[in-house]
Each structure stands twice: as C-alpha cells, then as structure tokens.
Length: 117
Image (cartoon, rainbow, N blue to C red; front, side, top):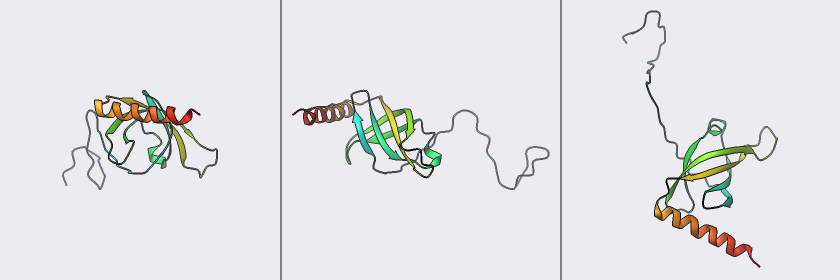
C-alpha cells in the first residue's frame, strides 16, 4: 500500500470523496399508511437508528405499483419509550409520473369514499 500523506498510519484504505456521495438501501419493509393526500402521506414505520436521519426515499403504495419519489418533511417517535423504534413519518411526493399521480388519486378517492356514511 502506498501512503499519500506524511504521518498517515491508517491500516485500511480510505477514499477521499469530492462532491456528493449517494447510496441506495432497499428495506422492502411494509409500513402503515396513516393518511394520504395528493401532496403527500403520513406513514408509520419501524426505523433503525441509522435510518432516523432519512431525508429522501422511494415508496410503493402497493406491491406492483409505481415507485413514488418522496422527501421526508418530519419524523416523530410514536412513543417516548427508548426501546420503541416506530415513527410517524411525513412524506411529500415529488416528481410524480402520470401513473403515480393516478395511483395516488385513486387511493385518495377510495379513502374519501369509504369515510362517508
């Protein structure tokens, strides 16, 4: 291993990143849809400590439905218990395709239709 810097005693290789570094993580975990509107949704989900800083994600509203790009707008623990890992997450839909917009409109209409007596 060639050392670039004088006094660098690291054993493992370290990469310097200039600019943005993006990553992807597919949890594939189901979430509870608490509320949905044309602009966004409120979900309840289990989040590991490393995911509590999540700011953007993709979401599918049904198994074979279109993937929706979302931005996390707020996140609050469901309870004050330290061991509880369930969070309410407010999501804003962004860059929706026509198919995704149709899916959301259908879900909103179904929800509004089922709430009327």
